[in-house]
Length: 309
Ligand SMILES: [Zn+2]
Image (cartoon, rainbow, N blue to C red):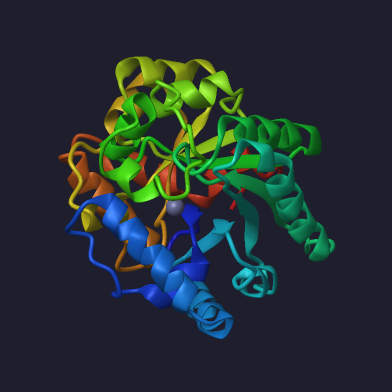
């Protein structure tokens, strides 16, 4: 049996899109395609993909899964999987400041509509990313997550185009998203991590995904607030991205985890492969044993009390 793993970042609902997108072009173009392909998919296709993705996770040793749900198509596969422990992060996004409450309410209603989760499964909230969530919505979701004792997961500082849009209101990410931005939208003038800090989204209850485009002062904010970070080696390779941030984050004392992200930006959901890719991306400077430990199911104890294997 492969060692039990924690896969700390996945989107099982996108598994049916494996091989349908190309990563060798700017990230905003990939985003445009994923939006189009999601809208063109049926719930049945997505649900079937989630089931086969979950089977792949199980056969390769994942026993704890943190998954992002923007639809409801992966819910059954995850909650019906015997012995799997999980956090189901309900995704929230919205560009209009006056819609923040409505967006959050819709996410909470979808959680409540599912009723009680089985033992070992927990609700979380995922305000998608600083380029798709208003500061108002970030603050509201973070407050609610704290009040309800739910974990937050946020895609943050994934690409330089995200930072450019937030700091200056320019670049390909802005060009892609401007049709949805409210008229008179102004960039916050902050880096993604600074924006999340300003909106009280950082802290020991928050898991940030990616953190590729971070400065030393961003890392210091993450460390000081005890925010956790999940990095995704397979997705990093898929997009041919540059510097992998794991060694810098670990050296600063940030608590880190590994995840596969989705099959729309990765070839496999095998955590052993993620460990090997992380080893290569870090130019073999982080020992394999340490990387295995970052990916181990035992790390879930940071999130799920009593989780040991
Ligand atoms: Zn993701």
